[in-house]
Length: 137
Image (cartoon, rainbow, N blue to C red; front, side, top):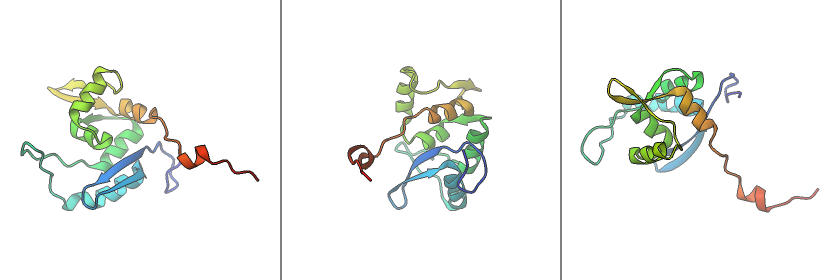
């Protein structure tokens, strides 16, 4: 699939929620990674409800691993990709709706290829206007 900048790779479309301005953004993984890599450096880690700091996710590095389908993805990166909580991921894994994690040095990790395949297999939402409106020429 061609990237917005003309390169050939397998970009993935993401839905991202910007906590700063409260806007839902749909971008290709390459443009999100480039935009996020400019902003991440100045941000502090977010605190979760239990008071622990959540690790910042490097989206540029994550995009490269998903595109080339190499490496492992940790829990924080999975949460950034999916936008759901870990208990939801756990339920999806039990129901075989999400790839199962591997145990690496006592931590849950996912193969980038498995996650890229899962993202590619998600259904595309049809637009209401295209489904209900028929234009005759």
